[in-house]
Image 1 (cartoon, rainbow, N blue to C red):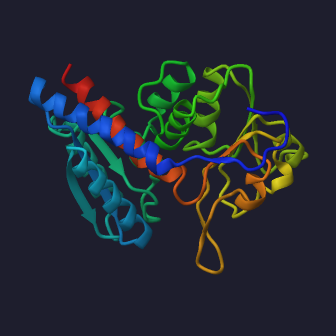
Image 2 (image 1 turned 90 degrees about the vertical axis):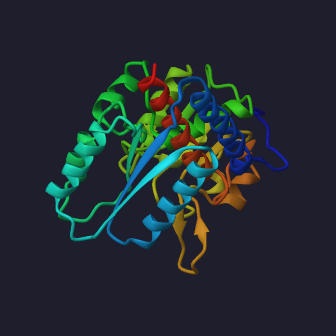
Amino acid sequence: MSDSPTAGAVVIDGKAIARAVRNQVAKDAARLSSERGVTPCLAVVLVGDDPGSRIYVTNKEKAAAEAGIATRDHRLPASTTEADLTRLIRSLNDDRQVHGILVQLPLPDQIDTRTVLELVSPNKDVDGFHPLNVGLLHMGRPRFVACTPRGVMEMLRFHEIPLSGRRAVVIGRSNIVGRPMAALLEQANATVSICHSRTADLPGEARSADILVAAIGKARFVRGDWIKPGAVVIDVGINRTDDGKLAGDVHFEEARERAGYITPVPGGVGPMTIAMLLANTILAAEQASA
């Protein structure tokens, strides 16, 4: 990474990297089938008819099929009770043919999300949300890592971006992205700060970052003058603007003039999230059949 202004950042192609990951997943699925007689299987649970969730589930199932991963599709009405959903989760936990369980979020208001996610067997928790898997990650013994942070690390690895000794700033402290992202960067020997809405001088903190990860859910919130020249900018956000277009958390056109590397929205981190879900399903199948 350069410490001087750049003529324009390298735009990280998440679609291409995700394609390489999915190709490897397909090879691993074929190997499991031929060597162990195991077909990796992902159970997908969707409650309600949220349009965005339906699209996400369809895309995930299509990607799984292309990679040789079987899916079990459970689409439940919005009126589903928590008791009914927990019965389904327990049955999937007990089903030895199912290796991974994905509960698509958000869930309807009458269902407690935390209760449901904690009910998923930690051995089938391919989203990496179960407290046991979160704890293993923070102990430096990761098993299933949340898909988006794992995808970001794969992007950094693909481009051979050095992390050891570098300063990383993560904007956002969610349990799904911000906190696991910080843990992974710290374990790669970066010096990490987590910033949030109460951080004093957020722009100043961002300017100190060699690696800047934005995951806050506010369109174009991070401006170009927040970027250290030559920094790596990872934009996890995906927001719908007033004109109906998609935008990340980073003002892309401004930031790319200063950054060394930058991810676009769409086509950056998003494809990696699905690819890592498939990779986690393979890991679950391997562990179950060992």
